[in-house]
Image 1: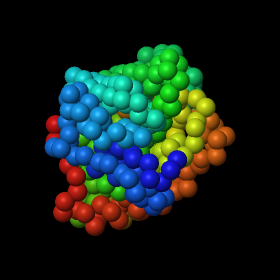
Image 2: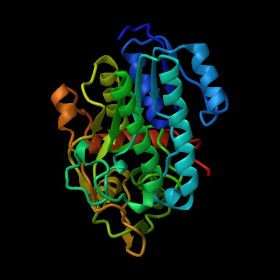
Image 3: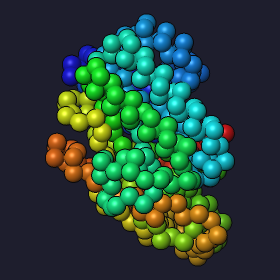
Image 4: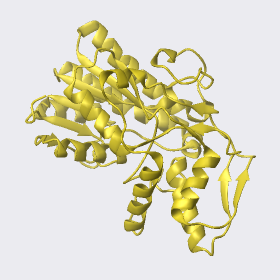
Amino acid sequence: MDKNSKIYLAGHRGMVGSAIWRALEKKGYSNLIGRTSAELDLRNQAEVNAFISKEKPDVIIDAAARVGGILANNDYPYTFLMENLRIQNNLIEAAHNLEVKKFIFLGSSCIYPKFAPQPLKESYLLTGPLEPTNEWYAIAKITGVKACEAIRKQFDKDFVSLMPTNLYGTHDNFDLKTSHVLPAMIRKFHEAKENNNSTVELWGSGSPMREFLFVDDMAASVVFALENVLPDHLYNVGTGVDITIKELAEVIQQKVGHTGEIAWDSSKPDGTPRKLMDISKMHDLGWKHKIDLEEGIEKTYNWFLENIENFKEVKL
């Protein structure tokens, strides 16, 4: 990939997009394009077509999405389904019609069936029912994966999908109503520490197992996909190591310095019992993560402290 290639990064201001932007700049890519949602509404097909037609990027990386945790997915099912479909379909269609050379689509491990065998292989897609608490987002992302696969199959174009495990890191969303579990825990433990180490209440039983990938490692996988022609259409991206939610809480509690109690509300949903990714396909090609969970949590908490007055909150 030529360092002067024009690369449009959709969602460049988000946690994942900003990490990809930093990684591309570090590697010497100098012709990067980004637009805020105020400048370009990706839900509007005419706007997207006009923008791609004018800019003529060589590559589109789709890191744009409406995202959130269990609560947000449950409360806004139509929003999560339709907005994600519009965003990705407009980008994929424009990339195809306007002869963009390479398209990298980012999804999520929630595309796989709730009770699929562990670890999750790419071949398990569409082999069983989804986890109900985030099926709306998952269905949209599955559609994006299949659209990219169809374009590869019918038109032999370099469209590839990367499915990360649970991502976290700097520039994360710490809004308790819409955030994912790890940043929500960081905020809860921090606020409880500041409140005389009061008790922290957490959802569920603590028994589900989750795999977490620091966002800079995800960005590195995108650069890897950019610089190589990947032979298949779908790749899992993760660490290959998981941890119980209870163990995660204890690690975050220790890193934050909270010394109070943890209370588990078992009346709240646990979500999928386990979501460990089989990442052998990416490993076989030469990509591996570099940042372990404890180091990643430290980096994320330090960023949270530095930006505590203005960290991003997502309002739906």
